[in-house]
Image (cartoon, rainbow, N blue to C red):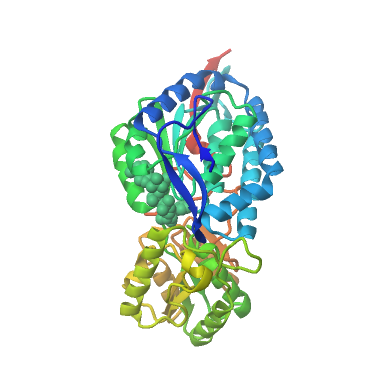
Length: 480
Ligand code: NAP
């Protein structure tokens, strides 16, 4: 069985103890062993990143880009294998995993391209013969902490802008799916990234998090994960006045209006609620449906959901894989019980799947609760699984009130053919990512990504906005 090492100062380090990476679709399958990093490893990585920083920051950005382009090519040469690793460790279906690996490759290339474009500001001065401009500069050593649900794309969308901007990094991936991120580090290593520029440490976030925040050379932390851990990181990192970027949970609504394109709205809600087992941060967890079509819409959702095939994501024809691990399965099943008490029996689903191959994995039926009201826990709390709460709205205004009735604000969608409603939604919806007549999930990397309210803190990720976090300005006034 392969042991996957940590990557510190350009070396693979496999000493010490390990933890298992098992397939949530079949827990008999051990995918590999990953190294449990220690606080001492973390300090060593921080020192290596600090030592590597001046030379890496001084390298022309297009030269840094060549390494990212090469890493993208290396990943592409292993495309199917890397995607299969992802399905086996995270559970999402093989087509979804291929989509994510493609996105990772594109993210590496996109930010490599930014190496030749990244500009500053040049503006006219009020004063005679004064030339004034601001250049971007990297911030130093950055800690990157990532979740398991997009185990390749999220590491990529933090690593690539951090590196192209000239920062050096320490990455701590999620313990539930560390291999997909490891594959990116492997590609960067093979592409010739100088030693110390990228460091990668696996192990429990609880054990390593504080040490990462407290490591002296670390100047910034970018975190994606749950609200609770994000808020804790905010409190700890603020003590050191670190730059912080937090992307956290959501309770994303899809607003379905009477005048929607009915069939496509059904498809969009089912897609956004259940694909990737509802484990996308931008997944729809609430459908807010106007009363004119409410009954018919719920009925259609149920019929469509019954057709979804749940199983091992490596098998053809499967729509939905398992929950990522036993803890996630338990949370989902607990919320289904809460939903039964609050809203009565679900209109579809509501059970763990058992029997045959299901007994070896963490499978749960896609589940819909209808008649959910705004104060129920299943309308307010993030479940992060294939559970949809349907709320009835008496009007567009009521739908907007219900949709905004959450302390989260990550993504939201509207299904309507009325252009005025579209604009009212765009301006009135309190969320960072909006879709119109599309599923709420399914974003691209070329535009800013992130939420509002308790979903996010700090500058946005991805697109040109990524550099708002990973660079600082130096402003120059020059008399000639
Ligand atoms: P999580 O439990 O918060 O873990 C995220 C990362 O933080 C993991 O690498 C984890 O390590 C680490 N961690 C745990 N405790 C830590 C600590 N005390 N200090 C520093 N790091 C610590 O979240 P998750 O279960 O992996 O991911 C699901 C959550 O992520 C959901 O809430 C989802 O909404 C959110 N998410 C948000 C976005 C977004 O862009 N807004 C995108 C994707 C996911 P271990 O794995 O070792 O515990």
